[in-house]
Every structure is written in C-alpha cells, then in structure tokens.
Image (cartoon, rainbow, N blue to C red; front, side, top):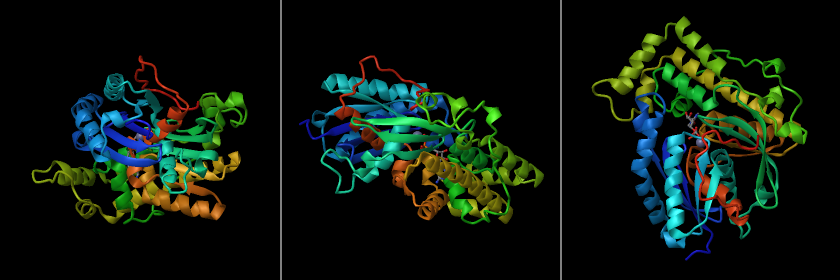
Length: 404
Ligand code: KG4
Ligand code: ZN
C-alpha cells in the first residue's frame, strides 16, 4: 500500500547498475549494486557500449532484488526515481526507459534526479538515518548550508548546497578544468600496471610508502588561464560558467598525471609496471581479482613512495581548496562525497583539518561513497514532497549540470 514514503530509485549513469528502496529519504530498506568492474577492467576504463549492454542484462534482476530485499512489492511504492544525467547516454537511457515503463504501468509519479545531487544526498541520507530526525526524514543538516566537494571518476566539483523551503539549491563554486581527481587515480594506477578502478589500489598501496618522498606540487591556477572574474558572490556570477569562478577554487589534475609519467620514465619504472600488470592480470595463472598482497609483492620501495606521494599531493590540493572555499563562504559544514571520498588518507586529513579549523565534516558510508541508487532515492525525497515530477517525455541528459 502506498503512503509510507517508499521510493524505488534506479541508477545506471556509468558502470554500476543500481536499485534501492528508501523510505522518506532517510531509511534505506535495500541498496543493490551490480558492478561491471570485471567487464571493463581489462580495458583499463569504462567502455560505453559494453556498459549499456551490461545494464540491459542487469536492470531487471537488480530491481527485483531491491524490492525483495526491502520486503515490498511494486504496489507498495509511492514513486520511482531515476538518474537523468550526467553520465553515459546509452547507460542512462537503460535506467530511464525502465523507470518510465514501471512508473507508467503502476501509475506512479516519476522523479528525475541529477547524479551529482545524488552524491550530495548520500551524505544527507547518512545524517537523516539517525533516530532524532523529524517524521519527514529531515535532520538538522536539512536546514543548514554546506559546502559539498563531489569528487569521483567523472567530477571534482565544489557546490554551495543550501536547503530552501521545499528542496535544495546549488551554486557551483569551483571545479576541475581538466581531469577529475578519480580519473587521475585511475590513470596513474594504469600507468603503474595496477587494476581498474585505480583509486582503491592506490589507497591501499600508499599506506606502505613515504608520502613526502616525491615533492609533487600544484601551482595556483592563474586567473588569465580561464578569464576568471570575481569570486562568485553575486547572483549573476553564481549562474556564470567557469570563467566567472574564483581561480582559488579551481582544480587541475592532468599536470600531476604527467608528472608521474615523467617520474616513471626518468627512473625507468615502465618495464616493472608492465611486468606487474602481466603478473597480476594477464598471466596464465592470474586470479580473477588479485589481492593487495599480490600487488604489494610486485612493488619496490621507490614505486610505493611514488604512489604515496601522488595520493598525498592530490588529497592536499583537494583539502586546501575546499577549506579555502568553506572559509570564504562562511559555512560551517563540509560534505565530501563521490568515489574518491572512500579514500583513507582523504578522510583522515579532512577530519583532522576540520577539527583544527572548527568545521564539521561529513562523509557518506563507504558503500554510499561510490555510485549507488540509495543516494538517488534520498535526493528524490524533497522533490516528492514538492511534487516536482518528471514529464512522460523525460530523456537522458549526458551533460546535465548542477547549479551552474
Ligand atoms: O562515484 P564513483 O563510483 O563514480 C563516478 O561517478 O565517477 O567514483 C569512481 C571513482 C574512480 O575513479 C575510483 O578510482 C575512485 O572513485 N575511487 C577511489 C577510491 N575508491 C574509488 N579513489 C581513491 N581512493 C579510493 N579508496
Ligand atoms: Zn558518481
């Protein structure tokens, strides 16, 4: 029976087919994620055509599993939510088409969600699930503005997230000019013969190296590089594209990737990286998923130092710019979310810096940091309350922006 505030969400924007049932944007009844990592790993990155094919294969069983794990049937739902973008066009379309069909068949409202807004609500979902939340699933977090760093394989964006009466308002404060931070993790891991996605490998191996061994640095982005104007304080500036953003809050991760490549070449580490890749992934007896111990055994001290130094530099840059933006906007709350927010050094340094500078920092659980559908259901809840429903002609928007 509808009326219990149950939303079924579907997320297919990249390489995870995910479905979840969440009650009132706060209580996760189920969250099922079918990862395609094994399909894409051998190519060192996501192959869009393969992603769509895998979503087609997985969508029905994943939605069925989400309903079964929640112990409900379609007739119990109040709405269906789906990721509209940004993401891969073909991949998004699989989720949207299926969600539309379900909503039509069950006469349920359909809610379109921005994937980046979903990542921000992954943090709120955590906070709302505490018992003192209000009956509408709201916590004190739903009433205070926060600076949100969304840091994943596709994005490195800073938003000012402000709760309004009915829903949330987002202002873009900063972003990457080139690669996303997660992309840099993935590219550096590939360069070193490690697996895909690279973040978890680097995260684990960095623990064994010296983070100060290679002094990588990020130079301040020059205003003239992107014709930056004033900091985004005025309303006009807040809706402006990258040229109007404060250069202090802009990121660039393609340089460090090149610096790692140069280091690898200068120190002749490439043959070792190729041998590592062979030993871990393409040899005759390699297991389906090599262990950290196996990877560690292939890395000498110099490689481990390189990995630790790379991670230390990336986390340091994210830290510096995020806290500078939080200070400039005078917010007291910082959200860090997206796949890279699973990183141990990142969590530890953001937590320590927040304590030192008197900010409150929040992360999603590890499972909610990477792509999932529970975050989409959580973001859909305020829209459900505001009756902000999608039209029947809803389509995918691969480059959908959030709060320009
Ligand atoms: O949010 P997500 O699952 O998908 C996107 O929306 O992109 O993020 C995936 C990204 C990948 O680049 C992956 O390498 C990175 O998050 N990642 C990590 C860690 N776990 C995943 N990066 C650093 N440390 C981790 N522990
Ligand atoms: Zn994502």
